[in-house]
Image 1: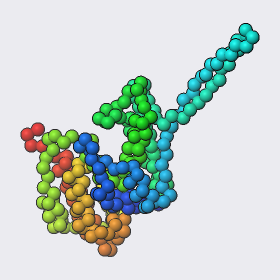
Image 2 (image 1 turned 60 degrees about the vertical axis):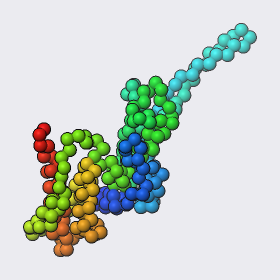
Image 3 (image 1 turned 60 degrees about the horizontal axis):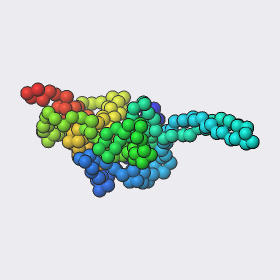
Image 4 (image 1 turned 90 degrees about the vertical axis):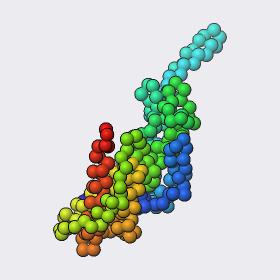
Length: 255
């Protein structure tokens, strides 16, 4: 694994472990994190972190006329402004990047009204754009791990979701017969497990995975796992995540 990948995985794990429970709010049935809380927690963990609001340049032509002594003088000048949103001609979106430890994640987010409907470009207001920028910033932070679980399953349909017995899966994993790994196999599995924890799952599945990881690791960071001490625990976490994924992918009875 490259040094850049190691840094990225370590920063993700550090940010993903920050408890934001008392800072989460809810609006029209959706959970969200205030940009101020996100920025505060991010800067406490990584003082050198920064964000970028991407803009586009719009050029305009200004024509002015001056009449002096019956002589008309026409002056044409060009001006340009930077606007913090983009458009497809119908609706608009913002683009915000957050950089942590040299790694940038970029979030594109539609400009929406208070009902989460896209705002037509013909009636766009900068207040709507500003709100979209703040939301995009928080989501870009989530891509780094900060509050990622808040968004788990937000793009997955809630209908026809099967009930999964996570306790039974955990019990089976506790009895899972591990194998002997060499260093290469251990490092590859550790990398896969850390990435798997970052994947997007329905909220109940995400919670079950986090709970099982905490139970097995007893607070120890996955990035600090070693072949000599943690091979068995790593394999059981890997087995648990894979079993959850299988259950999520399995067809729902009656469909």
